[in-house]
Amino acid sequence: MSILITDIKSLLLTETEPQAYVSGEKMSQLQSIDNAWLYLNGDKIVDFGRMDDPGIISIRKSDKKVHEIPSGGKLVLPAFCDSHTHLVYAGSREREYTDKIRGLSYEEIARRGGGILNSAALLRETSEDELYGQSLTRIQEIMSMGTGAVEIKSGYGLDTEAELKMLRVVRRLKENTNLEIRSTFLGAHSFPHEYRQDPDRYVDVVVKEMIPAVAGDGLADFIDVFCDRGFFTVPQTERILEAGIKHGMKPKIHANELDYSGGIQAGVKYGALSVDHLEFTGEEEIQCLKDSGTMPTLLPGASFFLGLKYAPARTMIEAGLPIALASDFNPGSSPSGDMKFIMSLGCIQLRMLPVEALHGVTLNSAYAMGIQDTHGSICRGKKASVIITKPVPNLDYLPYAYGSDLIDTVILNGRVEFSNIKNELESD
Image (cartoon, rainbow, N blue to C red; front, top):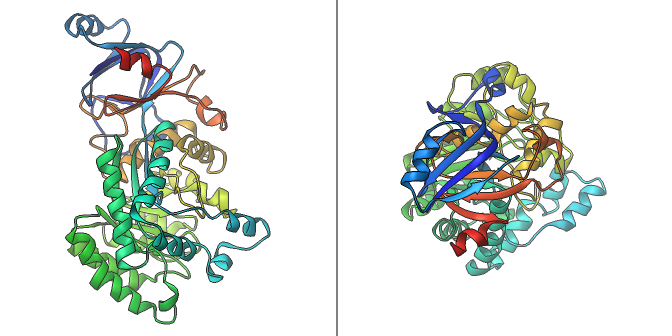
């Protein structure tokens, strides 16, 4: 199927020479084309230009079956890339939400057996088919909100079989949806009750049992560890990362959400693709990240939901770092995968400019998933995964109108997934 989107008010984040990511002041520089067209053929972006470009005439002549979508007054941008989620989980945790309102902290809820351990207990009781069904509903929801690529972590199993069950569900989602999905093994998400007095024994289980089983079934692209106060120490983290690397998994890290943990430094030391959360980031951490190739990934949805401090995005950008933004979609600390709202939080709470937030949820977050060569910008040869907005004044309006549904059409891999014109296209 080929699609020609015409009369685009502004085609955002265009590239003729692809970049892996943008850093510092370059995050505020937007390449775009006004009064534009975009040609998609199969699952690829083939060409784009201004409406007065003669290239559009030759496309109309040569491709008689092209589906033309007029988009006057609308923006077109790359589909969102959400590089940090936990969306494969069982049930929900609204009772803890009420506990938070009553004043209990994240750590207090965890000590009472809530939090991650609560989700782990429920997940173990849930069948794989039921877990898949719940997760598929969430996948369909985020696709409808413009997400075209997502990373999904395990970590609510905390024993070998339950962790494998989660990752098998992720594999089924890859096979049965039109979404680009990357999987991450996060057996080191928390310590189960039975290992609380001997946490190193659980690390033994992760290293000697879980990682070989996950790798043997080819279930994970990445390995992750929650390296923070009250969770995994730096030596435990490094041991787990070393084992994951030996089994072909590239590191990612949860770091510095609750304190200065050393997790950022450990991530850079082991070549992590990204270090995520980073609410506690100072000059030492910033210098460590500079020119490291490790993407700082901020999760403002968790800070918003938990009432925690926000990462110092402005300081990081002004120091020359790149920033990615992700949803952290999970049942306990960020129960939403709405990346447009994450853009709004990036602007309102992290003091990012709208164009910086756009780079954070597209190109830079694609890099944080290792898919920057195929996703994250409007570039010839990249995947045909784009969003068409409803009529809006400009890019700034997207995060400004934080509660409004401004997405008209979502095209993933050249296929219209959600749109008020979908039925018309299908009937053709």
